Length: 260
Image (tube, rainbow, N blue to C red; front, side, top):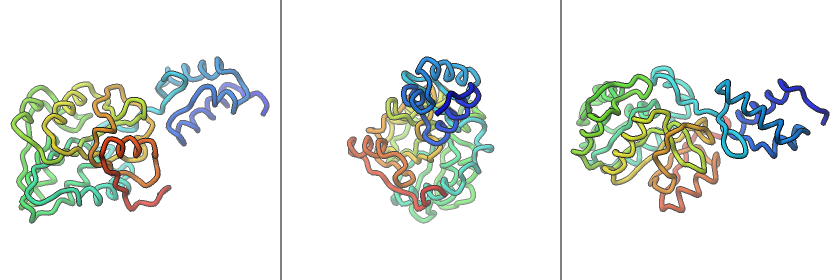
């Protein structure tokens, strides 16, 4: 391969990020017939434009989980619906469950059975509003200051209120997953709220869309080995699945075919 111009290298790096979620400098240097130093410089330039996040030896794609929930709701909508259909069967009669703020959990809220004496606790006004359409489910909305980007309340008041519960199952929202650090959030208060929530939860379920795999968010709050139920597309990330099963958790697959 002949030497590429800087903009051609950048395009190749970004294409790899979109396809794989991460790049390694040594591999890109070999592929593009250049030096690691050149690729590291390219990565610094791309990171300065918020197009990637530098890590040791390479870079990760930034998480797509940014902006208000209303804007994210229809992104990968078919996949989120497929994940929610699988997650619905995790819910058992008489349980107290927590639905964390997040667009995927809005789909789940719309599917919960109304005849199983469920209690749903949530920090998201949008999820509580959805529950109004499902009579027969007891709904408790915890309070605090609404964070538009998170889509719910994650401040000190909200964290204090969940101390009054013990949840049979908590559906935890995630922003990103990386094998080295686990699941992470974009917002510091949100990550701290989730850490508090984990201490009040019997089982932990994570609904993970494909676009969050191998992406970056700054605040880690959950290791894959702590997850009891991972709901995801089949075969998308064997390393994540292995981490979950080695920790004693179970991986459940959505019916959405790969690539759709």
